[in-house]
Image (cartoon, rainbow, N blue to C red; front, side, top):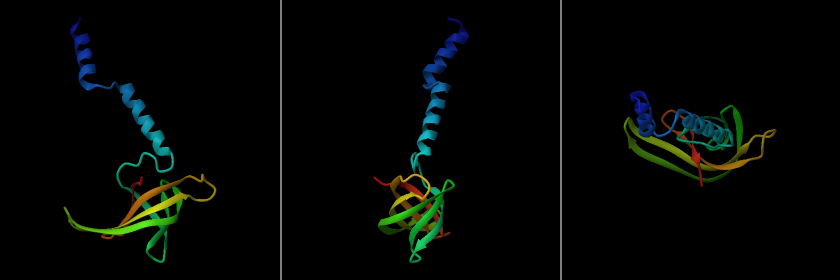
Length: 127
């Protein structure tokens, strides 16, 4: 076995996946994110369009699509000390669907409003 062949074999053993395997995995993740709220990892910023009674979320935009919230299942507030001071958030567990003219898929989601700068985030799909 030549030196370059030995190094190549060692690299394959040490690094696990080949570049093709990593690319396939990235493509799979991208495809799963294309479905309604699929592939959600970590909080994603959303634009809140409407609120019911000035408090409950009613409609938001995420990734250029409008979503309607048709049920708020639960709401709660979290106050804790963070690295940059006090952290206050209003959390909502909601049932949402894409707006009319698009698919009728629905999902249960957890969204929150960061009270410090009044921004909204889609945190995760609720089970």
